[in-house]
Length: 211
Length: 296
Image (spheres, rainbow over the protein chains, first blue to last red):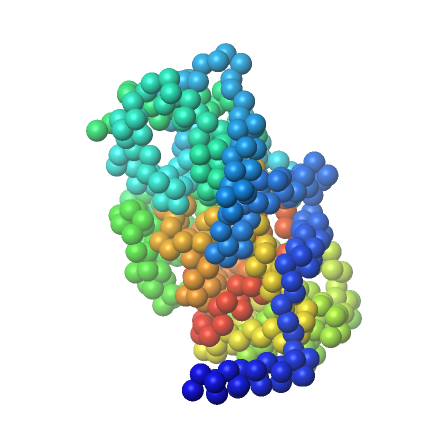
């Protein structure tokens, strides 16, 4: 039975080849083709076109299908992430939770419509798009984990403040290639803005830590 | 009803997170101008989404499917298809969508596909563009500029035509083949692009569309690496978009995703758009086409 199946498969494959059927282009060819498409498919000023160019971490993190990161790749992403983190000039990692609350619920900033950059005082933190926030909030996404009780579970020690800051600044430092944007490292948020988000997550008075 | 209108107005900025400034301004204005049926119909959906806190939105969608305002665009598209238009005063009756000139039955089900006359793989909208330029003498740039209509408007010619032509495949199964090498190349490029992360959000398509039962705020996200999710993509565009009061096409859907990802404007009919559509539609093979779809 197996043998017959194999025979037919071989016959079928040769028939396909003989008929000149299309075959899958190899990985390198596909990359060249698709990258050329990226260069030609967007209408953008040179400054905006830069956004389309991948950095090394993004290239590593664009695995196709179920392909897994190798250990060496993961280590490289972590190394790059470590090198990317900048701390606020003040050295203070915990800002104002009220400003953080507003930022967490702001999904706007830096989008491009017909070549023009969205006009905003500051970029939003985008948190609400993907994370459940304070207990009972309904209009929240679930692509990322629920953040309610972040500080209740972890406390608000200096170590936790630093971990939280770095996690927002470059999530790939702790979870290489996770879905979360590297909000500080890509320049979407400033170090100061991130300190406010840290406060929102760890301050016992913040709604996110309401029981 | 007054209560509902107030409710609707109150909920709108939240639904959009107070975003899309320039782009949605016109759309917001239309919301104020139009108090009409569509707004009331759309309420059912918003209301149920609110009440169910991101639960199953299918009940509201089903209600709307039974009386989809997008149906109105089909007749408009049919009239446009047969009308003699453009500098050459020609209709689109000689346009070949892959089944022969003017043959529309089942044509959309097999798109995107390779067209020898342009030596390229084209989706429905880029094919339409070719015909409007070659047969009717329209200027390509003019057609592209008007292809995606402002929200709340009566829609673009392209949107109506795309819907009419796709509706002629209603009830038929999506059947994209990769028999030409350029089709296969397009599919593989689309797959690569689906997973390609870029920009300040580090997003590729898969970051939002790679898992089941995910939402951005209350908006359900299709699980496109799953067969059923890809099938929904492949069989429901063009669709009536409740929040915009117009029919939207796949080209618009992709443009809007890249906008939200903070990437530059995706060019209408570009290869990136065709590659992604080829990838998704091929994965969606077997789905029964039913347009206009209905989207929030």
